[in-house]
Every structure is written in structure tokens, then in C-alpha cells.
Image 1 (cartoon, rainbow, N blue to C red):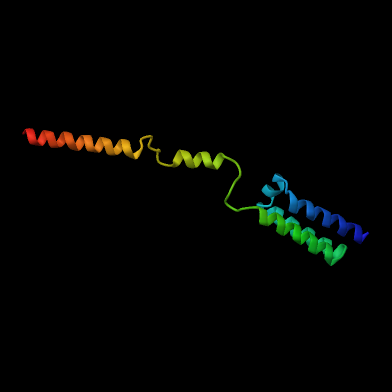
Image 2 (cartoon, rainbow, N blue to C red):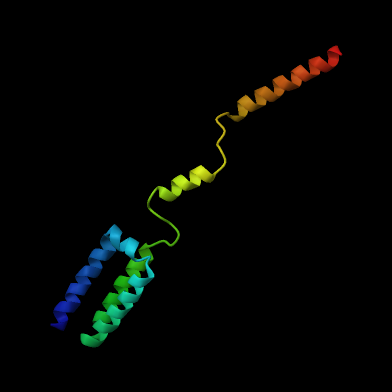
Length: 114
């Protein structure tokens, strides 16, 4: 029985390393999920054997490694940042330079005619 549990956990670990579902990535940021995982690791270590606890610990490490704290995959945060930032100029540097030169030339002509 212990061997089948360990083989199942090893297969699950291989699947998590290859492709972690997004809902598990989102849940791994939650503190309650981390506490529940640690409790499951302790229970599996005492009920089955230490290899089960080690495999579950590796699964937890894989889940925590793939979650980036402070970064979200949704576009909600990106939209709020764009709204809060300063407006982006639609003019390029050449247009601004041309306007400055024209204004300087007009000022020069105005000063010389006085």
C-alpha cells in the first residue's frame, strides 16, 4: 500500500513539474493553503512513511516556486497602472523640435522688428 501511495505521489509530482494548473498557482499564494499543505505533509509522514512526506514537500516547493508574489497574470492591475500614470505624448521629438525652432525664429523676427 505504501509503495502505491509513493508511486502515485511521484506521478503527481511529475505532472506538477510539467504543467501546473492555474488554479493551483493562484491557491499557492494563500497562507491557508500553505498551512493545509504542511499539515498534509506531517500527516502523510506519520501515517505512511517519510518518503511520502518528502514527495509532498517537493510538490509544495514546486507550487511555491511557480508563484511570483506581487505579480498577477490578470490584466486588472495593468489597467489600473495605465490609468494612474501620466498621459503619454502623441508628438514625437522632431515635432517638438520643429515647434521650438519656429517659435524661436518668430521671437527673433519680432525682436529685430522692434
